[in-house]
Image (spheres, rainbow, N blue to C red):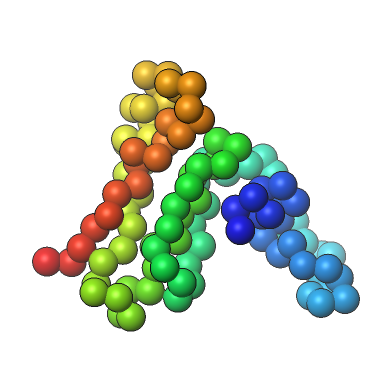
Amino acid sequence: MIKTLVDQSTLSPLPLHVRPVLWGFAQSLQLYPVPDVLVTGDRTDTSSMTYEGCVWLNPGGFFVSDFSFLCFYPGRARRKSMLGDDGTGDSQEDAVDYCKVP
């Protein structure tokens, strides 16, 4: 999903015959420049990945799970990027952590 959103630079990557666009408001759905973090929420499983420098995460359904979700720590991402990338392209993955309500 993140690859489609980032590559097409929009939050609505559907064809016009499926999802018509109100052109006066289309700029509000643009993803240019690529954001550092993109959070999308739905009922699917918790997941995260880094693509083209953008950390994407889906915290998952809070009430349909065991009250666990993903947390994003911006300080960790900034510290890691300041230290430099180790060449793997996943320098911001450590900023996402699994959290659970006590």
